[in-house]
Image 1 (cartoon, rainbow, N blue to C red):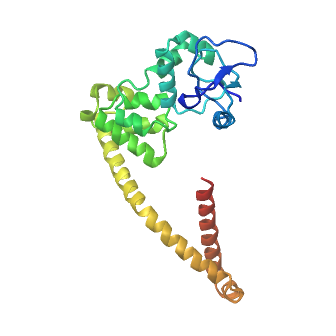
Image 2: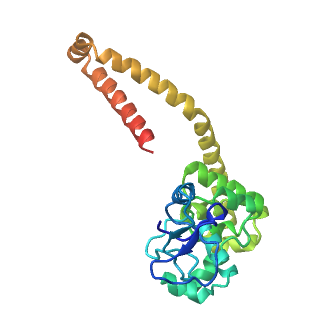
Image 3: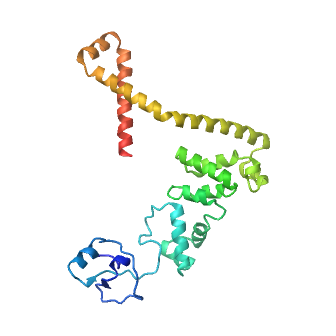
Length: 264
């Protein structure tokens, strides 16, 4: 049964390692693999099970080379590790990064609205984007976070653009905006108007996208049924080749969109 001892449901099974090593304490331990085995062992009346116990105290990740965690999840793990007594220096050595990186990750959510943190908790948002969000007041932070989710764009450049179009009243330090963006007040006002218009158009398109896609799928299905009849396809090919080409393009494009949606 690989992995350390599990939670309350399997504490009745005592843990020993293959190396005859006694852990520093009696647990509880996190079960990394073999979650069904404790129940099976109890059903067979077993009282003990051999386990491999990882007694290192990195408390962050067992694979420092690969990290697919969202940055907010990474922040919470670092904070939890530090609360349990792991120093920033030790975390930095274990992950082969500078200690400044650990400190930046630890302070990631300072000045960030809890609603924004909840909205972006599993999104691939970079630390630079959070730096831009931190300059905004909570209401504007939430607006920007919702725009990022809607556009599926979490880059720092997009966050910088949204910061540049933020009203001074929605910023903690409005006087720093010109220095950060390099834009004059007039340019910022024009950019703000243009971005507001783009956001309005985007929301309208987003609202109508579902209905438009449904109509397109229905129409493409009808066209595909027409083209499945050899006589109709032959007639269009002889008399209206340009219409036949467009019909085929519609059917192909719709099929590709459906395939992409299923793959996603």
